[in-house]
Amino acid sequence: MGNQQHKRITSTELTQKQIAVLKATTKFTEKEIREWHEGFIRDCPTGRLDKKKFIEIFQAFYPKGQVENYCKHAFRTFDTNNDGRIDFQEFLLAIATTSQGDLDTRLAAVFDMYDISNDGLIDEKELTTLISAMYDLLGEIVCKDDYEPKTIAAAVIEKLDVNGDKKLNKAEFIAGCKNNQIVRQLLAPNI
Image 1: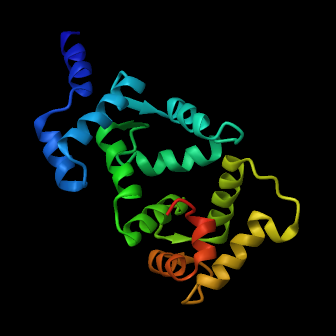
Image 2: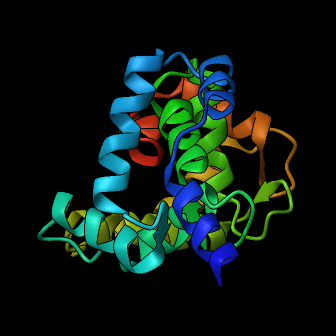
Image 3: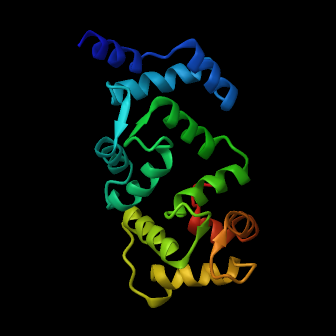
């Protein structure tokens, strides 16, 4: 029992080794890492963010949206070790990738979220699923056929699919988003 308590305490402490790793893999300073950690521990006293809390946090940012579908995919992307929880290192690396990386890196992170099957390709069904989740997140109501997620997904795949396989690989996705502002606004609005 004493061992379990020790593990719980150390999971909320930030070690010099962790700081060194995070400084080497992000552009955050030690001071910024410590500030992010303080906020993370304040919101997640156990040192781990579960799906329920993740959804609560998103709901605060999108009070009019239905965040559950989007959060399911975002959580899967952030939880890199697939243990059902996001620890501080996973959290900060996700923040750094989506905010500090160059355009290719940030678009690659978006691709990874859209690649639900984790096969290195995005098909129309996956794209439709994520576009629907984004509509839910933003509280969008779709009235016209031209704006239906399935219609948009088919049009995006047709526009970006260079090799003609009716799927997008990471290179096609990144190039398409970089070369088409409208597509980038649609698929990666915060980038």
